[in-house]
Image (cartoon, rainbow, N blue to C red; front, side, top):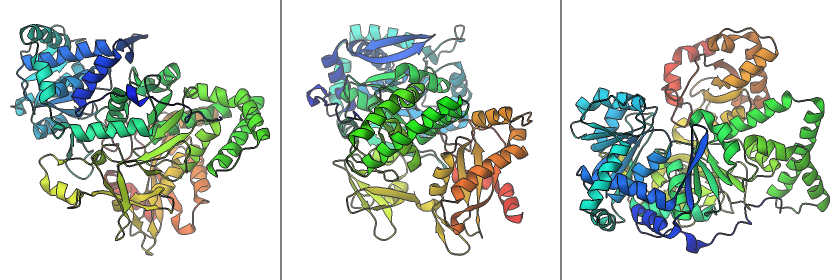
Amino acid sequence: MLWTATDHKVNSADFARGETMSAMFWHAVATRGDQVWMRQKEFGIWESWGWKQVGQLVGEVANGLLSLDFQPGQCAAILANTRVEWVWADMATLSCGGVTNGVYPTDSSEQLQYLCEDSSATVLFVEDDEQLDKALSVRANLPLLRRIIVFDMKGLRNLDDGMVISLDHLRALGRAFAEQSPALLSARVAQCQPQDLAILVYTSGTTGKPKGAMHSHAGLVYSCSRAAEGLPQDARDERMCFLPLCHIAERLLGAYAAIYSGTILNFVENPETVPENVREIAPTTLFAVPRVWEKFYSAVTIAVKESTPLQRAAYDWSIRVGGQIADLFLAGQTIPASLKLRFILARWLALDNIRKMIGIHRARYLTTGAAPISPDLIRWYLSLGVPMLEGWAQTESCALGTMSQPGGIRPGMIGRAIAGTEVRVDSSNGELLIRGPNVFMGYLNQPEKTRETIDADGWLHTGDVGAMDAEGFFRITDRMKDIIITAGGKNITPSEFENELKFSPYLTDAVVIGDRRPYLVAIIMIDQENVERYAQDNDVPFSNYASLTSAPAVLELIQAEVSKVNKKFARVEQIKTFWLLDTQLSAEDEELTPTMKLKRKFVEAKYAQQIEKMYKN
């Protein structure tokens, strides 16, 4: 086999059982014992936790919450980066019969206040002193909040605040409480019902206040079991946990699917160390958003450009051979033995080294979702010998919708409906609809928004426009609200052009604009690292980020990338001019979503002046 994704046969008898997330977690603890479940790097050393050990930690945290009179149905919010303590706090809250609300670590204090108010949070877990400062600045406006629990007390040893305690202190309270009331935690787990509310996942709120999507225990159990079965994995597998756990994708496809399947979770040190950590971990299955896959590709592209002529020749020949294999595989045709032999040589010459450079040399398959991805990028990873499976879902569908399978990859398509989940195209407007046990309970405190989103027949209206072919494969055209109708009446789907642009190593993201306009323009965010390297290699002078984006040589570089993409589209669909964002953005900036995508409407509004200039020139 050239690809081993279908060789991995899992034993369903090893999967965790239970009708609620808490019951499933404790079943996993009881049956898996000392098997390693979690790893995290601290101060340069990887630390491991077995299932039994995690169970003890979660039990201490849960009993600590019970000692604070945490009641069933009450909410605990978690404000932290992705780390093992996040999962411990989550499972402890659910074990008490509570509701977990994840808060993005990049959220402002004002956003934190809104999320805690809306969810009626009584307990707040925070990561460190930085996040604690946010909480303390707004706690006077949160009368229901009773306790703030800090994971990392570094820099807070002299803190004297009756509301604030450390996670270690909470665990100590839990150990003492368990001695006095040893049966209460088990009773709480048993009392929890499948239809009970388990977690709140807030949408990004690009067009108003964030909405709290409510997911029940039954929906979560169903979804994580389907995810783990649709993407075969078990305790022999290792995956990397690095995306925000308050995002439904990492929560469901990462942490919860691992509880069900036993897959080992490896937590990165911090978001900046992802490239280094993925090489150390070498996961066997890896989910990431398109921006991560684009960054890996860009790093390889730049490295190849800077290599010796012999190395470039070896790569060019090897990737061509891999591309021939990929084309035949995608077409469902037989791969000749002679081509297989050349592919083995190609792997030895270059492709295996490229896979090791990224950290995917052990990967059986890669998974992408949460945003559209360029079909060429999927083909490139397949040319390396690693299948990339594209999925499509939403927060409201609990990360389940459609998914490609290792034997049914079609770049540009998002696969078929996941077993047990119905997906159809609305004949009136082309909108994709989802129905199944995975669909959420509704939006917290917003019944009108719920009725707008779920119709009387239980269909979730996704807002995505798409189509289905004769074999049941779906394709996303665009978001309904993002479709551009030019002044000439031409319907344009901007995401197709934007995805092609993002395939360039010098571009990170783009927003195509042109609704009711005579032609299309684009606001582009450059890849700082790669463009800076280009400028340094070509003696392009710049003093800061803004000067980099205005340098004539850089503008020519980006124009060449835009022109390359323009050739793939009809004249009316081409970009006439562009403007480079002259501010270096991070996850804290309002222009970006937590998954680092540009917010189209926000960008159009904030940079209206620059847009008007493009149409006047």
